[in-house]
Amino acid sequence: MEQTLKPCPFCGTKAELKQAHYLESELPYSYVHCMNHDCTLHNNTAHFSGDSEEKNAKNAVTAWNLREQIPVPH
Ligand SMILES: [Zn+2]
Image 1 (cartoon, rainbow, N blue to C red):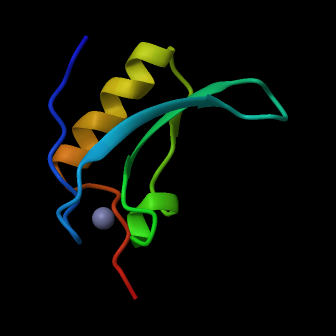
Image 2: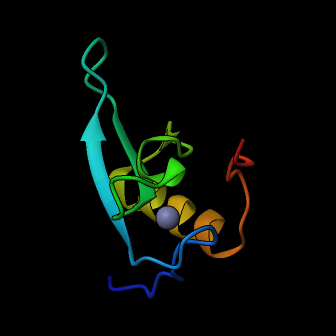
Image 3: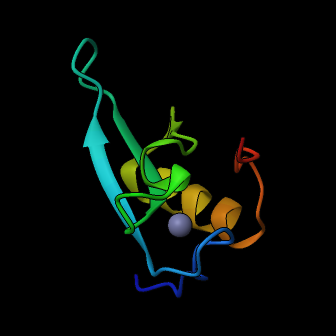
């Protein structure tokens, strides 16, 4: 499943989808982040968990593209 990600709303850099697992519980989670290491959205993005990896990924991509759950820069 390939979905297009909009560029970062803050710096315009390309975004990427990441999949990982929480260490404590081994539950899968997904998030979309900005690939610019200096950008606030490189580390500071919402995690999506509690579902299958595919569903988590879809939720993360949808939220990113809708600009939902993206923190306000300080
Ligand atoms: Zn950015």
